[in-house]
Image (cartoon, rainbow, N blue to C red; front, side, top):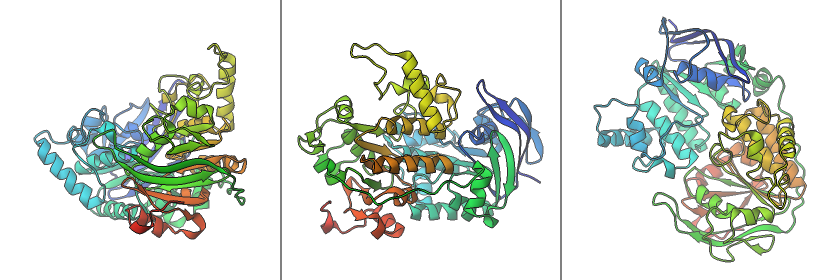
Length: 503
């Protein structure tokens, strides 16, 4: 008997047919990958399975019986749990309170907190159950979602990009856990753009393109190139890396120390580093170790830094706001797409005005035609799948919105670009394009600081690497002299405490 079977599932939105006659078969205990480029319809299909979105047509069978899943609560009662790529947490509640909403109401909050601690320890997912969600980083919120799903002891667990916030060691540990769940009969639907993960973990793979299933394959018998061709019709173009021509220091951070603004935040301790014109400096680290606080200090969202501790092209910007920093050539891509990188209900054209002022006159008049053309150019250049420049930001898939936001800042020709999680949730083709654009920007003389939890990405594009752990920075190391094992260990804070002199 199949655990889950979809037949002829279709879903039409105003601007796109997200699913078109989709079929899917998942067996008990099977780890089943769903692979596809951004906008292929994967997330819509998962939301239909989880009851968050009703299908227009088609049939769902659960353990051999036809079902109509009308809500996530009904899905959970059947034994289906899901971890969304865009999280479904209440910001004003604590992590424990959010988890308890999806569990047996006979459990007290203290019991839920104890279970969270047990699961977090077992799976290597560090979470402070008492912290309000609005104080958590994107990575920490994802850990809360994963723990909430695991605590329901599901028969089918849907995971959407679950390893984007984990160290290599923690990924290995999570895979052990998923294999244990599989051996006990739990089916797992696994969405990831990391082809190596799919080949190492999954028993079967369904490939989608343009809302349709285009093929099925045993990923253990396929190469990355095979999977790429099935997903995007071709292999991603190889990155064109050239020797960097490093210029003068564009960004200088000297002995930056900041007390946390939030009681659940991280203090920054004596951070010192430089980013030069024509180089990419990568910052690795497990989410929640001071990345948010560092980004806020550099972007101008937190202007409390001591005078002289942050300089941009020789100008002291420690107490400057975002607008003043942008005027000096600093552009910033935050890790949160919706809410910070883009306003959900505004159109893509309107969202360009958040950081681009070419279409705004000195007296504040907006040239709407120019705004429209700017958005259309970004959509075309970065291959964003959207219903035109008038489409709302929230109507885009996560990966397509990411391409638009990153493209908006790259196309501004910044002197310094600071990017947090540049390819989070982006398919292999789009990730290769974004990384290529970052390298091209570097070659044009821009200084780039890239914060990412994707070690492969940092090794691919960075000239030098730093690691942040518990609000402190590791020594700088040239990428060619580093290893994933070394950086993975440093992500736990395991570097020589006597060598904290930054370069």
